Length: 150
Image (tube, rainbow, N blue to C red; front, top):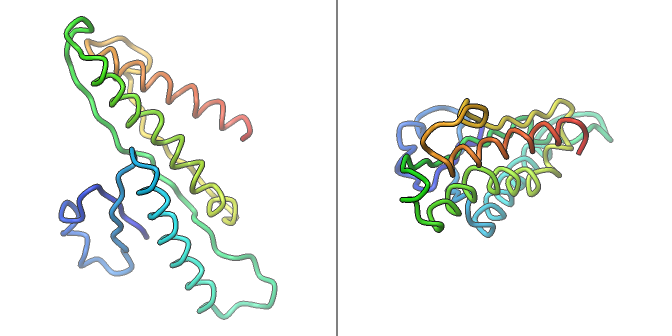
């Protein structure tokens, strides 16, 4: 199992769990996403090499990708800087799209892959957080579209 966070110290309590690999990852930075992918791929490849399976067996892939990073600001639209809205949309919508795209080769190696995206009721019902609402509505629509067939 792989656990990721922007700061490794935020996951210190997971270090003692057997089989958990901690990886630094900032989902808003593509180089960080690609570095995490490389580490996950290398560890999965190592597991595949160590496994005693028949010749030509399907290589183990990534079974589950959980896109759960998110940020919010609760300010009236008129008081929210455009840069803040961009950061919210980058984190809540673009990052899951990028994570899924980059990790797709490992997901496709799995016989039962699952992509989980953490949404919000705010994607359906308006609240005071316009940028957040827009990002979660967009995430829902993107997930529905991907579910129909990548």
